Length: 194
Image 1 (cartoon, helix red, strand yellow):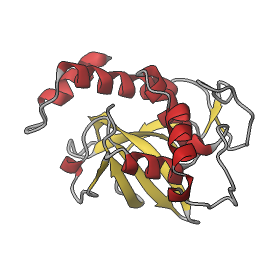
Image 2 (spheres, helix red, strand yellow; image 1 turned 180 degrees about the horizontal axis):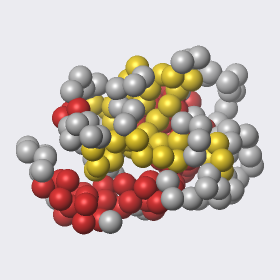
Image 3 (tube, helix red, strand yellow; image 1 turned 90 degrees about the vertical axis):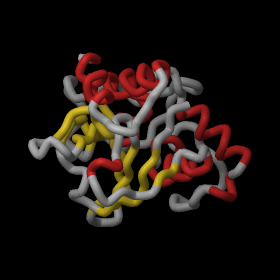
Image 4 (cartoon, one colour; image 1 turned 120 degrees about the vertical axis):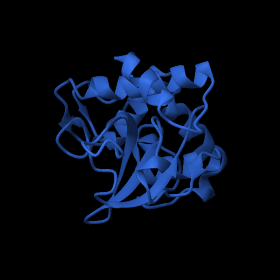
């Protein structure tokens, strides 16, 4: 499966990556793709979870859980990183849920918090207007109808047009890999490869 990712990187002119960066991105995409092969219920319920490396029960999750689990497979615990940054810089994060302090059970599972975190890490990119602007392993956020934020990982596979990358995400029917890049209003584009 990782061979597909290597080939995809070779086809990206002007997108030179170190071997370590390629391996990180391949791991990220592979882990997200594995989620699409499991039965997963969309479940946004608040839960008490372990810290660090806390996770909701296997077989359950939302869009952010696809991202969190993929980054964990690549050795990055967003639960800890977001919690640490929010603890030190709480005033810089949106208070959309009546938050008065951090909550390491849920903070990393909220798209606006991830957007703020990635922006603060210098990972924010201009929102591209063409498919070529989005590279494998990038993160994209959207605003869905009903003002619901969403996040997904750019795949190394492409739509039938052979230009538009597919997205690995969970929009309500479990984790999938499909052609939604330009289906909704894009609110953020990030490249976070620590």
